[in-house]
Structure formats: C-alpha cells, structure tokens
Amino acid sequence: MEYDVKYFDRFVRIFAKYLTENKEYLTQLDAAIGDGDHGINMDRGARTALERLGTMNPKTPRELLRIVGMALLSSVGGAAGPLYGTVFMKMSMTIGNKEKIDDKDLVKALENALIGIKTLGKAEVGEKTMVDVWEPVVEFLKEKVLNEENEISEICREIIKLAEERMKATIPMQAKKGRASYLGERSIGHQDPGATSSYLFFKSLCEALSE
Amino acid sequence: MLSLLILSHSPDVAKGVKDICLQMAPSGVLIEAIGGTKDGELGIDAERVSHCLEELIEKSDGVIIIGDIGSTILAAKSAINLLGMPKNVKIADAPLVEGAIVAAVEASLGSSLDIVVKKAEESKHVKKL
Image 1: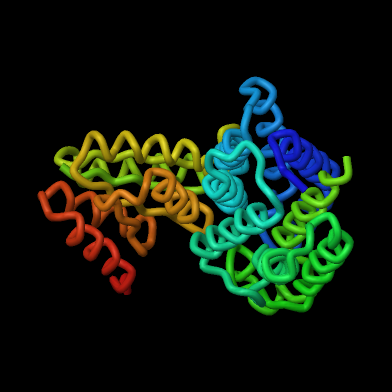
Image 2: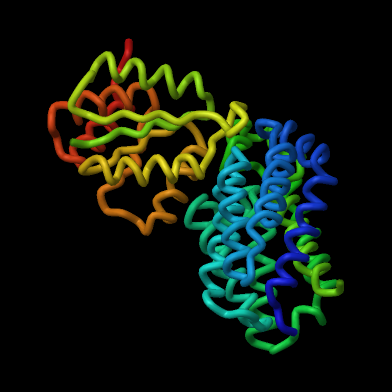
C-alpha cells in the first residue's frame, strides 16, 4: 500500500472526528485524574487543524503533517499540545520530501514519533500515559511490518485490538507522570485520557486505509 | 544581555511573576512572560512559546526558561526542538516564582547563562522558615 497526501488527509479527518465525538468522554476521564481539559483541548486542536488544512491546502504528506503538528502545538493548551504536536512533526520530518511512502516508511515515521514523545515527556511504559499505548503498538508494527513484511492493512484488526487492550490496561496503573501523578494512589482505577486519545489515533490510522 | 522567559498555565501568574522580576531587576535583562491558551484559558500556547523564544534568541545572548508545571516544560522543550536545539537556551529546573526572581537578578548583574541557571536551580533549596 502507498500512503500519499490523500491518505494522511483522510487519517487526520477521521482522527479529528473521533476527538470531537469523544470530547465529553475524554474530558470526563481527565476530570477524574487530571485537570479536566483533555477532551476540550483535543477538540480545539482538531478543529484548528482542519481549519488550517482547509486554508493552506497542503500538497505533500510532509506539509500536511507539519501543518497539523503546528496547529496542535498552538491550540491544544495542555501537555497534549507539545506531545501530539511532536507526533505529527516527527512523522513529517521522517517522511521528508517523498510524495508517497510505503508501509515500512510509515512504521519508521511512527517509531520516530514515539521516540519524540518519550524524549519530551520522559515517560516509560507502565506510568499511565500515552506511551502505554504507543510503545506496544509501535513494537508490534515493527515486528509485523519491518521484520515479517506484512502490510498494515492486513493487521489492522490486531492493531486496533492491541491499542484498546493497552488503553484499558492503564486503569489499574498508578500515574507517575503528568498532573495525575500528584494524585498518587488515587489515580488507580481510572483510564488514562492520553492513552485513550492514542487509541483513537491508531484506530483512525487504520480506518483511513479502507476509505 | 540575557533574557528570561517565564511560562505559566495562568496568564495572571505569568504576568504577576514578570512584574515581581521587573521590580527586582528593572534593567540589564530582557523579561517575557507567557501564560494561558489562545482563548485565555488555563494552559499554554506552545506555538507562541516557540515564536517568543525565537525572538529572544535574536535579541539577547542567551535565554533562560522557567515554567510552572508539566505542560509548560513540554512546551518549552518542543519549542527548543523546533528551533534546532539552540545552545544558548536553557530550561531551569527551579520553582517558578523564586527561580525567576533569582534568575532575573543574577542575569541583570551580568552573569553567564550557566551561572544564572545554577543560581535559579539553587533557589529550590532555600529555606523560608
């Protein structure tokens, strides 16, 4: 499969739709253990990204992902702004000048996005953050796509299932990073909002394949 | 001359900390403060942080950044990444109010960037009682 600017445009629109649909849900999750703005912030980011894509009309994946990254950086407000901003900027940088990329390039872009998140937030798996979804999914993609040479479209169901499992696995964790870490043990028993929006990210990435 | 960039989730806190710093160090250091989202809500506008940092790098010999919690530091780090990791920019691991005051005074006295960061970071050990 080849991924061009149209694919990334579909992906961003699906992700934006999910963020807007889940605005209340993400905010409720964040209200339990954080500052209660993740849904509002991500919805604002999604709408800003779509507005800028509409006016700037990018012609390449690099341009499109950069516009989305800057839109999230400027409008999201919470920690998710720099974190998701970094995701899109790192993907943009990895793809470089290519008009179209293949499955392996996409996995490498996602791997660099994960490295960006971890460098910025200093979070590791098990600390109740977006990394709890990102790292296992990226490891799975590296194994399946880089090593075993599958196409992402063949393993979509498994990717979504894994992301969902890892999202739910944040419920019993005690937060070690971010605002939720101030709560100590009281953060146990709640699903992490960043892990939840990360699940929506990978779900959107897969669903954009089939449209 | 060095510059100091104050970051807070709250526009009021950012402005308030800047006011205190200016009282202590009215000249000899360039002070900017950013707080809140684009809509004036609690949060941080990382794009604005990036643009402001770019300006301060041009206008001064070095920038020390001090933020309050979590996402202000992430915003600062991502701005530094976006600008290609400039060497003369440092984030101080210091409490916002005390650290910013110490940094402003130290910078206004003409100390180097490393010294200013060190002094600001030492402020977290200052005993108040």
